Length: 375
Ligand code: BGC
Image (cartoon, rainbow, N blue to C red; front, side, top):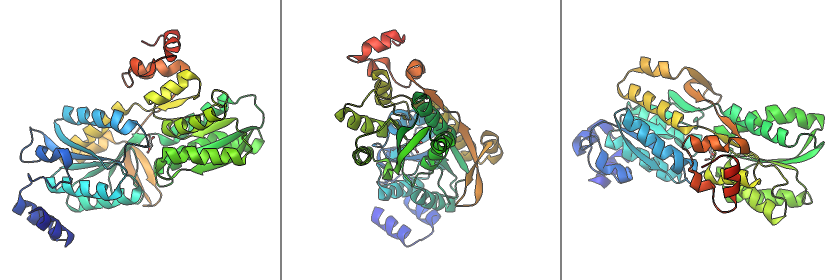
């Protein structure tokens, strides 16, 4: 049955017919662990699908997004099937097909890149399933709604953090290790950073050595790329923009090898346990805390409204707009505030329950935690 259905789908035969012929409760394989939670057999609640992009680029996707989306969607009376494509676009597509076949009423996508995100959204929309772009906007896509943070502001906080850390160091040399060029967020982070840093480069207060985007946010590649830039600059660096904590960690490994950790401020993002530890150790200057619970809750409220077909209610939630320059359109959005975290604010992330004290206050860091009142 499964192969027949896939063949029919591949042949572009009307999905509604196929669905009613096969029933919606057969596990297509695409839905993975969610197979038993489908429309017919659900424990109650309207089925919605969530596809997350990968796990290796940031600890956030598994550590924060997955559990927080699950809780928020359930709290809205929805029955979520949450899967992760592990950075594989083919898998992303297969997961989406599985969820569409399973009869999800809303599809929430955080795509690996705009191309696959746009393709999947279009496919779902063609079946009458509304889509929400989650965290990453798919440029040229068709989702009517987008939930994220103010990503230009994220970049501004990174730029400001580095500028503060380098204050008084005239002509300090900066290397920028940026996110994936195929992730619109990385473009926005860069835009925000440059708002602060470009005038300083132009004035000669800071000196840009090189700015390098890293394909797929690949942390390892970020480290080797940083090492090459450092070597070709005769081992000189005074400050590093790293677009997230994963890239920051890779940069710090290289700085350690060169005896430079703790002397060279490094930025970050996501307030991961490793990022916070590096801050407490003095190896990373700052991170950006994006309270993902709020992102998950706004997404769940939007999904509930859309599952009810209540676009008026959805529009009341998504009162911001985001520009999609490729699609030449404005997308209705919820854009939340990010926060700058230096050593003194690490406590906040722990107090808000994102990271546990015993995940960061290990070994030598216990003393720093005591000093900062973290327990
Ligand atoms: C997210 C960041 C994350 C990065 C890598 C971006 O789209 O907004 O929070 O660190 O992707 O996963």
